[in-house]
Image 1 (spheres, one colour):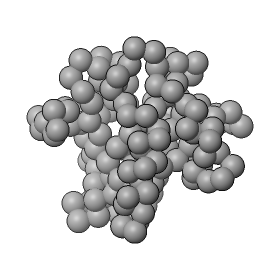
Image 2 (cartoon, helix red, strand yellow):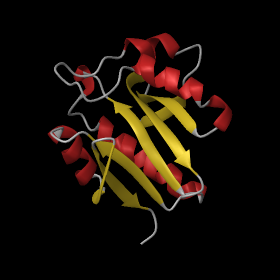
Image 3 (tube, one colour):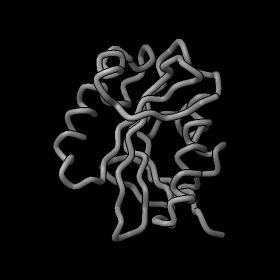
Image 4 (cartoon, helix red, strand yellow):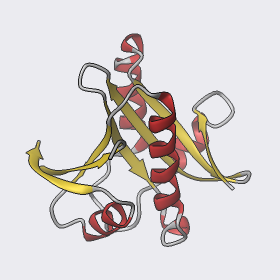
Length: 148
């Protein structure tokens, strides 16, 4: 079963070892993501977490909450080569969506991808995200509305 866990002393170095898929230059290295999370630690809006399938570390996800806009942004998601095409990305999106909905603090989950990243676009669309028409920092923004 897939579940998300906080980054702590037990998994920190394992998270740093996770590498993005070969020839995939779209996602920042986890060391950058963890450094960015540290920068925003006092805001309590950024949450980096390890993705586990049962006891096996299969990826990394980091969210950023915009409470004023009631949007949870999936800032980063990384599934290494050895775990790609096994449903972990789609399942992670579902867990984040379900948690956001259950919290009652958000109306939507957003994420973005670099144009040309066909794998990300496919996974996000399959999970129910819809392009908003917005482009931020050169990335296409997609949204999953939590309330119909």
